[in-house]
Picture 1 (cartoon, rainbow, N blue to C red):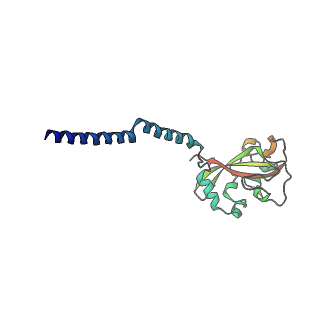
Picture 2: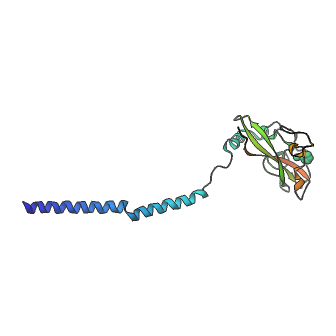
Picture 3: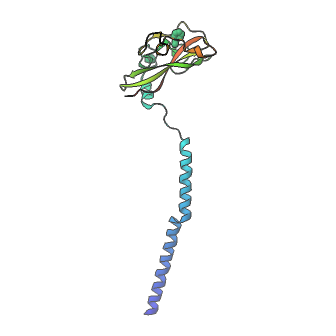
Length: 181
Ligand code: ABN
């Protein structure tokens, strides 16, 4: 009887040992280090992954508006634009036409986007160094403007003044942030 019990205990011992080895392999120190290594490598790569810098709502809302809307002086983003629309002058609403360069200084207005009812900061950069095109759409909108004797508060100004090439060509409208609520 005692021999039988000895055998039984031996079998139980073996099984317990095998189980313990398996568990150690699965959750052991090496396995932990390997997993931690993968997690750390992942964390290091995370900042390289793309993320949304597009001011989400504003970009999405602009996508909802047709080019025809955007080329109209009454388009919401042009609420403080005094100049010619670059999109009608060989460029786009946000990029200068080839052969011209963006002004180093700009006028910033606050415009309400009717698509989401929020106020956005819009920078108006002039594009410089190329002759103006007569057929371009010219807008005179001055929301938030103050009289001309306070230059920083007045938007009827050639923002190419700080560039080497000071000749005005057209103006782009870029959403640069959200206005405080
Ligand atoms: N910011 C457009 C502009 C250019 C020249 C003169 C007045 C206004």
